[in-house]
Length: 256
Image (tube, rainbow, N blue to C red; front, side, top):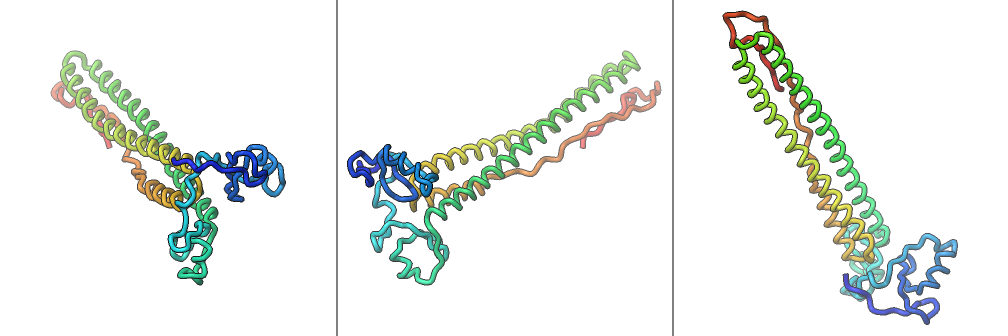
């Protein structure tokens, strides 16, 4: 970010104005800033270091050469005080700082909602993936136990069925793993947007900041939270043992 030109404290008029009060729109030296913060009426005023300010002149009305201090809610554009009596006469207005505060709050809420939903989806997918893996192991054990009961006659059939269970269950696990990866990617994207939001909060509130926050809001809305997949289930049903039906002795399983 470009740095602002060197300023002198507008209070004592002697020391360097290294601090900028966003509420008063004045430069303060360190000592005057401390005195300003001690006053009850300005205790909660926000300061930015002057080196982090956008140079003056980049947030001024092109027609009136005045600084943008208002937002025209009718036209959704920043305006100066002279614009109020001009082509924006009769429109509804709000303070620039209020519009920025509203956008900041909306962006923060959107990010938190997205990341919270992503976290919830991740937890559900991980829990169901673990449960499904346990169910798969239980079915494999049941198939193995059934195979041990009929000894060597069905060793080949046992191996074939277990291989089929593992193959099909892997496909289902791969689907869940893919959904898990997508949910984690959404979470990372939300966290990156949150970092952008916090970095943007450190910049000077002006037209450029408004545009960046609007762009960020669009990016947040583009975050896609996929619906949860249909979680698979697996079970095993044994069948009565007959010597003449070796191929069907092991029973069957289902994944839904």
